[in-house]
Image 1 (cartoon, rainbow, N blue to C red):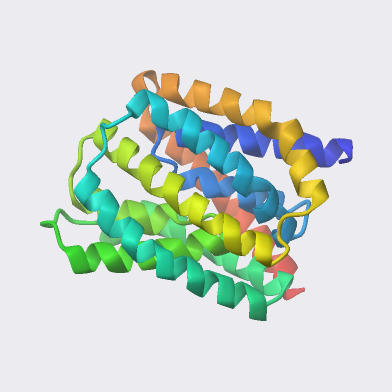
Image 2: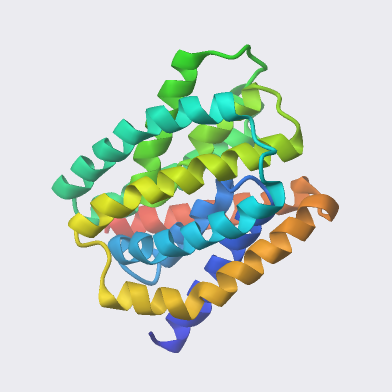
Length: 245
């Protein structure tokens, strides 16, 4: 691991930890997008999965049993076939397509957040909608660890309070990330380098979650998410440019 990669990776992992620890984890996929600027998308997602799992465990404890199990269960059930679809897509694609997809997801997330017409309206609980949201979340989570946006679109429509929303998102992707381990291993996404680098970066994941849990109660969501939007917009544009040139 060279110094430039380590510096970028440490910042990206810490940012993901803050998101996982205090803000529902939706923007945590920005870490994969950032890493894809200095490594291949395969290396980026392979490095991030064990770290995201560590973040999930660390972030879940302070919010244990504060989730909405009914909505979480529906999304998890839908996510399993979504993960399978993601594995099939990964098998038949290449790194440039992955860069393009990650870039488009990044920009799509920003547009969804800042464009008032795309904001989610309040809705009653619907199992079919939850299953579809889970399916999409499972697919995008497998490809780029970007399951947060489709998950957020569904859960935000349910008008959960801040803590319940965060706990539910954390629980969902703790389980979804565990499901992803087996296909990641079979597809060769995990390598000695990703595991070794993950061990070196693990402290940054824990520190990020620790900061996020505390920021959950004191930091304005507006400030955090505006920073996230700017970061994702720049990263998404660069990934799309790299994929097409």
